[in-house]
Length: 528
Image (cartoon, rainbow, N blue to C red):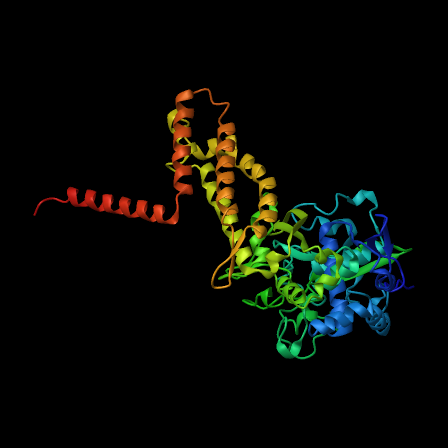
């Protein structure tokens, strides 16, 4: 019995006429320039499939070593990938007795659980709501996608002991794709998307990571063996790292049971940052994707490297391609617009909270012009700073309201009135206008440096202040105590005045307050 993923349809793609169909790996690389995108059963599966395909391309071409090699890969149009896949054909058979795709062949049936149960081994059912009595099973194409997803995007959870184990740790760790904003650069075709995310791969220059030994994908070396803490040999090894030990048990073309144990993990204090190319970092911590926070509020993290912040390295590579005019050959970037597909699965330890799959587009000038991206960062900081209007600390508008109302807990009142949601919703459209207008608001100084935001940044501050004023005023409209409302609105205007003050005005005010405090302390000291 055989189900070879090179020939059998299993990868869901969107065709030019917006239809979803499943195709084989070979067919994918034969037609990728006409296909639109991958569209898996859910966003985590889609992300995992993209990472899987990128690993194939890196291994097949051993690159791109530089910009010229990237162009050669583009021109080759998938033929090298097809040749590589055929060379390793036996490793892509889902049911091969010796090297089943992404599976450990020694896992026995007594380690297996019903397929539905893998979704209930965490504390929340996100991927499935099936139960024991449903007779739930998966087709072979679905099972192949599940294997890719479990190795690429999966939360921590208790699993069965590995063969020969009866005690000790059996908790599978989060894959590094959990609780982070995973960035893909989008193209208009599947080929463009994959090539835009095909990071420069040059082990001799330690790009994107150091290589120790042979940097091979796990399907060449095997997905078996006792789980251990191990360091990937390189970027390709990392993309196919065996985070789980898995084995399918198929009967009559259906899979109703799956053996799953913990897999490998990174050694203590070893960060995935050295390998991750699609994740932004602040203070050496990955930028997370919040289920309740607008994506644009992290836009600077995807576009700018500055101080302790580093945008995804794939964006650095895109800037290099743009500098060589290679990226312009793609019709997407010829219009000077870059689109990011940003996805993530949020979890609280073993409890999945939900996933996100969002797009963010911006003029590509933000990728290539640090000065412009820095001004955008300032604009976002202005909006974030005004968030304090909706807090409940002493001296805030909501605190003043609660004080007159004798409400007690200002925090619960602020939460109930929820002016903050109105505030951010109002800024959503305004930010898109700012994103488009900032590149045109520029002046080149005598030093030859082009600077931005002379008009748009002050105008944005006014927009932010108006949004904060409107959102707060609307949030307290139901309060019938006019004295309380008046006190809150007076406090609001004072806070807005503080926030719109120039840095020099803020410094002068701070110095005046410090001098006044010092004088008060001196007056309170007893005469000697």
